[in-house]
Length: 304
Image (cartoon, rainbow, N blue to C red; front, side):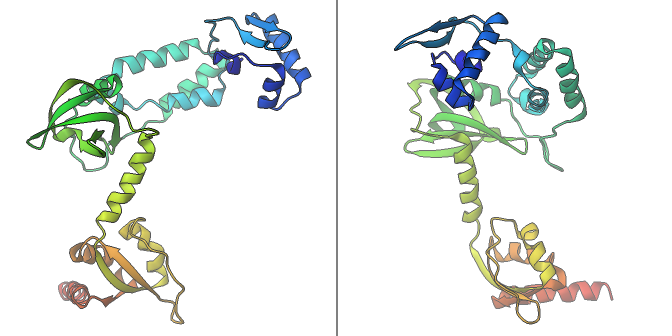
C-alpha cells in the first residue's frame, strides 16, 4: 500500500520483486486491501497494473511501535524554540499521538516522557539566535540574502542551517565557494530577488561532516615526536582528539611506542601531553621537551 501510495502504477510482478514475495501473495494482498476498503484499481493486459485511487492517503495505522517511539525522540525543545516552532512542534506531537491506536500511543508517550535531549554543552553561555527563524525562511524560500557579518556586508546563497552544541551556522554559497557563518555573528539579513543556484548533488550533512574534518586538520600545524607507554597510547585519542591521532606502530621491547604527532601549537601540545602524566616522554622538539620538564619540576616543587 505504501509503495502504491507514492503515486505510481505497478505490476504484480514488480511489486513481488520489490517486497520479495510471490506474485500469488501479491494478488492475495491486493484482495485483502480491497476488502479492507483501500480503493485499488487493477488493469489487466499490456500497460496495465495496480494503482491507488488518485488523492487517497492512508492514516497512521500502519506505524509500528518502534517507529512511533522514534518519532517522539525527534523532539528537541531548544532547537524547535530557536526556529520559532515550539507551538507547531507541540501541536504536531499531539496530533500524531491522537491519530495512533491506543497500544502504540502509550509506548510513544512513554518515550517522550522519559527521554530528554539537552543540546547545549556544559559551561557554555547561551548565544544569540534571534535570526534563526528569519534565516530558516530564507533557506526554505531559496532566495539570496545580504547579510552584515562581522561589520561587513556580503550577498550569499543560503543552502541550509546546522546546529552544533546549541550554536547555529548558516551554510551558504558565496561565488563559487561554500562557506559557513555563525548565526550569532550575523547582524542583519535582507532578502534579495535573485534565486539561489544550489550546487548539483549538494548534501548538507555530508558537506558539514567533510568541512569539520578539514577544519580540524587545518589547525594541526605543530609537529612533535613522543614516546608513549601502553596506558598513554590508549588515552591518546581522548587527550588530543581522534582527528589528531595518527596510526600507531608497535611497541618496543620496553612496551613504549614512538609516535609522530601533529598538534595545534606548542602551547596546546604542552597542555595536552601533560594530561598523559608519566606515560609520555618528548623526543622533540627540544623546546617542548624543556617546557614539559619545567612544568613537571614546578609541580614537584609545589608539592614537596
